[in-house]
Structure formats: C-alpha cells, structure tokens
Amino acid sequence: MGAVKKAVVLLSGGLDSATALFWAKSEGYHTHCIGFDYGQRHRKEMSSAMKVARVAMSSFEVVPIRLPWGGSSLLRRSGPLRTSRSGLPSTYVPARNTIFLSFALSCADAVGAEAVVIGANAVDYSGYPDCRPAYLKAMEKAAVLGTRRGARGGKLRILSPLVRLTKAQIVRLGTGLGVPYRLTWSCYEGGRRPCGVCDSCIFRAKGFKDAGLKDPLLD
Amino acid sequence: MGAVKKAVVLLSGGLDSATALFWAKSEGYHTHCIGFDYGQRHRKEMSSAMKVARVAMSSFEVVPIRLPWGGSSLLRRSGPLRTSRSGLPSTYVPARNTIFLSFALSCADAVGAEAVVIGANAVDYSGYPDCRPAYLKAMEKAAVLGTRRGARGGKLRILSPLVRLTKAQIVRLGTGLGVPYRLTWSCYEGGRRPCGVCDSCIFRAKGFKDAGLKDPLLD
Image (cartoon, rainbow over all chains, first blue to last red; front, top):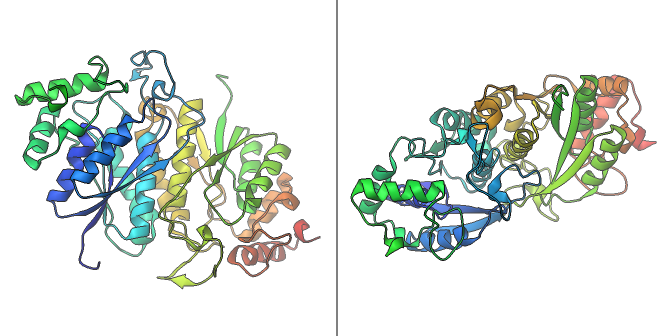
C-alpha cells in the first residue's frame, strides 16, 4: 500500500460529510470512514452513513463514545432543541469536533493515512466554534506534533473542503460528484421524514433552493 | 460556583498524573478527574486512580473508549511490550493524549472549568510525541478556538506542570505535596507487584533513586 493515498473521513450521514467523502474520492484518496454513536437522539444518522459509505465504496465503522457530562440538547431524549444559551445553539456538543478529530487522527496514525477529512462548514452553519477554519488549522498543527507519523516528518493534513462554501455550493459540488443525497439524513430528529424546522433542516432546504435543485429526500 | 477555580484532571493512576492532581489542589483548583478504560492490558490503573482521587478529595469518573484500529502493544492481551518500531516504543497508543485531552476539554466546556491538567512529561519519558511542550501548546490553542468557553473569551488552559521536570524532581514535588505514592501504579503489566523491567517501572525506580527516596509501593 506504499503508493496509495489514504484518508480517514468523518462521516455522520448528513449532507456535508457525504459530500466531503465523495470529494475525497474524487481527489484520489482511498478512504476509511468513521462515524460515532455518542448518544445522539436517534441512530438514523449511522444507518444513513453506512448506506452512503457503501455507494462510495468506502469501508466504514461506528465508534461508540460516551460523554457523561452531557452539555447539549442533542444528548437528551426530549425537550426543545433550539433554545439558545450564551449565543450558541443548545445543540452544541462540547468539543465534539475535537473528540471526533482525535479518534480520526488516532486511526490515521495507526493505518498510515496522510489525511483526515471533515465536512465542517463555517458559512451556512449553526455557529459552533469547532467548525471555524482557525480552529481546524490549530488542530492540524497539534496533529502533526502529536502523532508518530507527524513526529517522523510524515504528511498529516486535516482537510475541510467545504469550510468556506455556502450550502448551495456544497449541494452543487456534491451533485456533480454523484453524492446520493436521497440516502443522507440531516434532521436532528429521527422521524420518518425530516421535521423541517430544526436548524439543520432549514440550512439543507436553503441549500437545495439556492442551488435550484430538488432535495431527493423529500420526493 | 462563580468564584471557584475549577480544573479537569486526567488521572491514570500512575505517578505523574497523581502528582499533577495534587499540584492542582495545591494551586487552589477544585478538581474533577477523568480516567479512561481504553482496553489497556489491566484495569489496575483505574482502581489506583480511584484511590488516589479519594485521598485528594476529588470526584472521579471512568470514561470507556474503544480504539478499534489498535496500533499499540498496550492494547494487545499479550506479547512483547518493548519491541521498538520506527524509533517509538511499541507501547505508543496512536494520538492517545489528543483523545484524552479532547474528552477533558469537552468536560471542561460542559462544567465551566478554566483548566485541564495533564501529567505529561518530556524528560524521563518514552519519547511519545504527544507529551512534548510544543504539542501541548498547539492543543491549547485548538482548545481555545474550538470550545464555547474559549469562543466567548473565557480562559481555558492546558496545564502540564511536570512537563519539564525530571522523574526525581516529580517525586520530590509530589512527596512535598503529600501524594500517596503507595496507591499509585506505574507498571504496564497488571501483576501483584511491578514487573521492574518495563519502561514505566524503570523510569519510576530511577526517579525515587535519584530523589534519594524509597518507593512506598515496594515496601
């Protein structure tokens, strides 16, 4: 596997990470996807992620993690999702991307991957601090310093191809790359159809509308 | 709890993290300790950590994590521990401190702690890249950028009080602070008595010897 370009992709089953996976494929990466079962309200995400990974011809595994200290409405069984506290939505999970990236970096260091791919977006997003370019750059620096691969002078990048795109640009990019959006799931609730009112549904709907495309999930 | 200084402490049950905990106490922090069950060879570590936390009057919880990709001799049931590959000991767990710190930062962000304390040491150590000061500094920057607390302008430090001390200096510091070293466990194996030959045992023995003190665990 010397000449093969490997990347570990964080895959949530949503629109952004699915697009990031197909982007990585189009860049020539052989990919291994990781999803997390961290007590989020529904597990529909992970079944969507599995289906997306299959279409992308990518291996996929779910890593269970536990955040006993909670700190997010997404981790509670019920109750309102949109109540804002201190300027951040209640759906913020403390340091979630730092945890997700740390597992992905561990995996990358173990399998010899040169990149970790994350679908973070800082344009049409909920304002989570751990989606911003400056944060991702700082994590990349820590990754290089804190891994065997990096310490030996090997390349180890954190790639966030969507970070500066609007949702409409993401939808257009993904449509061109053949992302099976009908298999993705963005809604914070796990019902049979998207709720249409959570932040995630609203950003998704806006993306398809502004791109002049129809969301195949709503067919 | 407005005026209380809070810190989340990474506690492994070993000599270094126990000393770091007592250091944090001496600095006036109210502490919550986190340990990890990540499939290491023995669970003696966590029972030591619990006892140390009790003496320190600190809350403590164990977070289970799974690293399905392995990549370390510490995660295997048996086999040699000291075989070196590519200049790093086989006991290196890929990106372990990045994972540990990410959970600690998540907890700190959830409970409103201003510091995360880690007993990392870069003098008498096994050469793990994620123990070096430059790495810890980079993680601190990512922590500030990637958390609610940091994004709101709050203080969030990663403190590594032992990072530039020799093992002898750590033992002297801890002895002065009343660390119950008889309750700590450093050996990579989980036997009734320390094996005396693993890296961790050797560094510990050297520390007590150079400090002119007797290791109470060997009484």
